Structures are given as structure tokens and as C-alpha cells.
Length: 194
Image 1 (cartoon, rainbow, N blue to C red):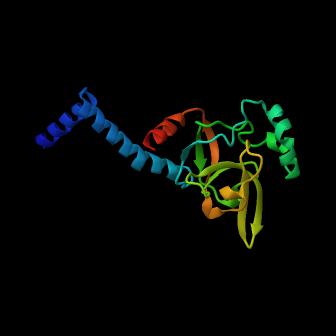
Image 2 (image 1 turned 90 degrees about the horizontal axis):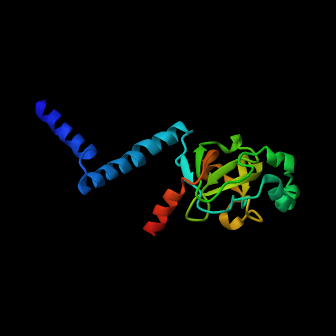
Image 3 (image 1 turned 60 degrees about the vertical axis):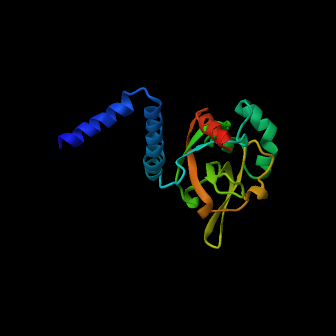
């Protein structure tokens, strides 16, 4: 018993008190494993069973380019009004001022039937990465709920992204919270690894 205790104490001291490069690298690997295989899946389970509980925004499709809501609405209102969304509706939506590339968005796993027009969802698209856009339409077709989305900074919904008829099996989660700029860490690592 004393031997095991002594070994654990040596390992603990090596990881937390040793200033060597080997200690630093091993600590980093252990932290990565804990985050990737324990914390991240646990967070996903707590947040409604989503496989992506936290995402980094990697494009400017939801960016309002620093404009206040009224200015942004004046510039973009024609598309929304022609699609049945007025200023009063939009002003009540989550993230009514959009969000920026580099922000972190926390997701909650949601069924399509629980998602409303104006919610911001992440879904699997035709691109390599999941897309995060605002729901602009929702309908029932043969007992299945479908969603249509649009990036606030995009002129239209794009069939090329496969966002004009999103089935429930492609919905990853609904956005519930934003953490500004923290996503640049992930974006930086992704760019380095390309």
C-alpha cells in the first residue's frame, strides 16, 4: 500500500510541481483527454444530449457589422418582411444583434418541434462544418417538422448549404448563450493544423 501511495505522490509532484518540458507536455495531454472525453461529452449530456454543446463561430454570416439593431434592420428589412417577419418579431429574437466570428455559442439539444422561428440553430449542412443560422421558417410535411434558416448577414437562404429544408436529424442544437471572442482560440488551432 505504501508503494502505491508513494508512486501516486511522485506522479502528482511530477505533474504539478516539476517545471520540466516533459511534465508540461504530459499535463497538456491529460488536460486534452479530460476535456475531450469527459468534460465535453458530460456537458453535452447535461445540455439536452447534443453532440456539440459548445461551438466556435467560424464565419461572419451572423455578424451585424457593428450596426445597432435599428440601423441593421433598415438595411435588411426587405427580405424579412417579404418572408413574414416584421421588426417587432425580430426585436424579440435571441441574438437580435447577431454575433461575431470568434464567439463561442452554447447549444442545447432540441427537437425541431420545440424550435421557434427566430431561434438560432446549428445544423449539419453540405459544407464540412456545421452551420449556425437563424430559423426563418418552420413547417410540417408528412408528419415531419422542417426548418429553413438564414444567416443574418446573408442576402438569402442558400440551397447550396442545404438550409432551405432542414430535417430534425440534421439539427445539432439550439443556441442559448454567447461568449464573445473565446472561439478565436479554437479557430487559431484549427488554422495551425491545416
